[in-house]
Amino acid sequence: MADPSPEDLERLLELQATDHRIRKVQHTLDDLPEQRQLAEATERLAELGRQHEDLRVELERVTAEQRQLERETDVLIERRDAERVRLYDGSVTNARELKSVEAEVDATVRRIEEHEESMLEVMERLDELEQRSAELLAAADATRQQVAELEVALDESARDWLAELAELRVVRDRQAGEVAPELLQRYEQAAQRGGGTGIGKLEGNACTACRIEMSYADVGELFDGPPLTTCPQCRRLLVVSA
Ligand SMILES: [Zn+2]
Image (tube, rainbow, N blue to C red):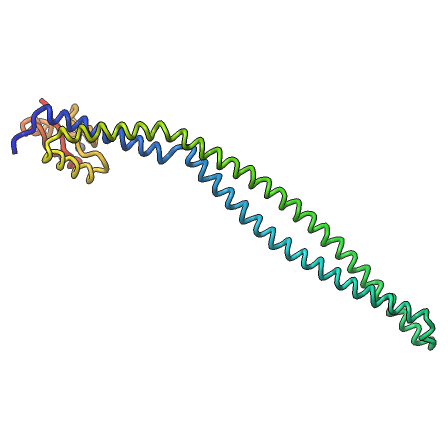
């Protein structure tokens, strides 16, 4: 294969510059601050949802506890009233039995008071849970709003970069079309191996792709060789211009 002309080499280097720019724009797009903020806000929203779900389960549990206490208190009140009726309606005349009914009324009244105390505690706990639930819902609303705003901001921020990317791809297609197919293939393969950079140029005593300095003897050898060769350091294509 004949040595590529200086124009061919120039086109290849331009193509490499465009590919480099495309990679940078792509990287910028992947790494937009709005993208990170959006991911964070979305995660916060999910966490608030999980917290609210835990709270809902706890609210259900405490509400069930409240109902249970109400039912038990109703039963105790009925029993107390029935015992009081027995105490005063004259059906119990025996003094010992009366004393025992009295003791039962006292015991039932004490249990009712205990239940009422527990009920107060449960209602306080329900108040706390409902307040916390309202706070979580408000926080979730605010975060949802933030997510919506960030989505708009991300679209706006990405728009210019996406436009630039589209333009660069048009330029790339044109430049690639101007490079001899065989040369283009060598470049593409080298670029694939070289993390997107397929070609460098000898500048001073280093290749612009890897920037590893070479000995003067090596540089001298390169100058004695063809205008397009392989970098002895990074194995990418290397343009040695006279
Ligand atoms: Zn190199």
